[in-house]
Length: 401
Ligand code: GLU
Picture 1 (cartoon, helix red, strand yellow):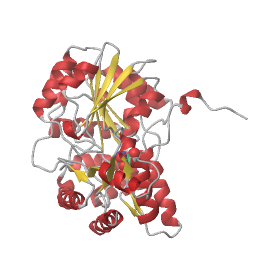
Picture 2 (cartoon, protein in one colour):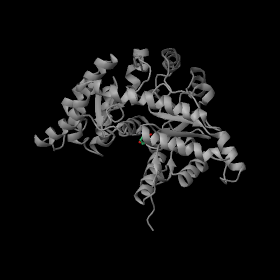
Picture 3 (cartoon, helix red, strand yellow):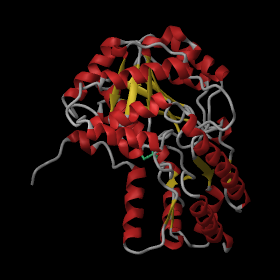
Picture 4 (cartoon, helix red, strand yellow):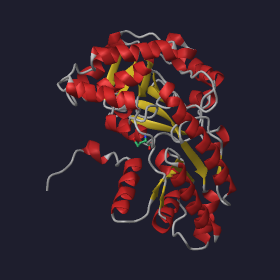
């Protein structure tokens, strides 16, 4: 019997993908499942982006590209940061990868040494801790509950940060909570980080364009430019341009050796991101964000609707989000009720989500997957019809207990 690596035994399958796969299988078997699990926009990729990919195929852009991406894409990334974020990078300070997840993975592989600590405010996006473990590091998850608006305060950061802290994640707007850090909160965090020159800041900005109130998005690099050589900005085209399957993410940092290291890692693993997707991403970034507007408008509408519905269901409670496309709700009261009426045998959010999936055919993700128990995440990156039916089913599930 062959043994697997110790490394792989440290991690689990991505819980979001595990649920997405399970729900897809149930659907294939003919069950009428409503899937509110995946953070994947239901809109089609905009036409001009698809056409750019078709042109790329026709024009023979079907070969290897430089590992870090084509010069055309890197220029589009540099221009995007200048135009949309007022951040300056050169071509060798950016790298394109196979999705935002891959960008984070490469960044961690490039900076983590054995037992280096990485601070992760919880709730967090499911893959951060496992990617840190795969890189040999130690995730230090800091609970930031509903009473903190799910955000890390400078005070909590000061208590957790040490000379062993190699990196910290900041994800705003956040997956799974949709919370957005204010400029003053970011400034307070930046002031703490200023005193730890060996700590990198991984700014996961994937939901940058999905902010509900009209306001200029800011990340730590805008707030404290002097930290720029250690602020690793991660972004991608998946969420804003509805391009999840194309797999294009990118990283920027005013730190050439770091970007070069990520390129080296990439050259020894995936070679380069898909050449056709790169052409599509050029069209997405150069085309600007006008095509995101109608999608954002729809997300704003669905958010209002979902928050209202959740807060009207006895046993559930959620805050309004400021961005992204999730509702992260407290289901502790519902869990208690279901447990007391013997509908579930364990008092956990996993039992709660399984109960909804198996009995009411509606799929969401348990809060524990994001590092906060007794919560559940549903995504409203799905049609209004599906969202309504899914919420009807959740309401029905909890109506007779
Ligand atoms: N980021 C999305 C989510 O949280 C897609 C799944 C994943 O990559 O984990 O649902």
